[in-house]
Image (cartoon, rainbow, N blue to C red):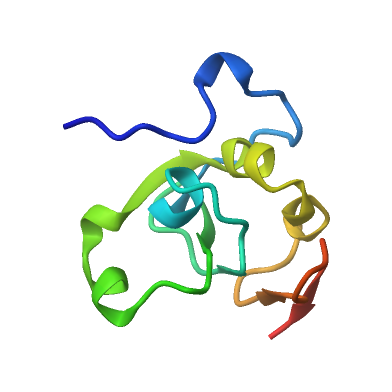
Length: 108
């Protein structure tokens, strides 16, 4: 069964410069949850931005299931949650947690 993502491809706007793919939780891309935690690790390949996005309410069992995550262009996640945009230039090793109820993040 194919996933039904929160934003259809034809509704995607160019909000950030191309920077490669990221990995995001289905809680964000399917369920429409806002990004609660994001971190940037060493890229797995030249097309990988290194960014990883989760809602922050995923259970351990959820996190352990690779079917709950998918690769997306970083711009797709920015279209779901524009609050991530100012942080996308952060270096590898950076981690950010959303300030509850706000469109801002703090270093974790």
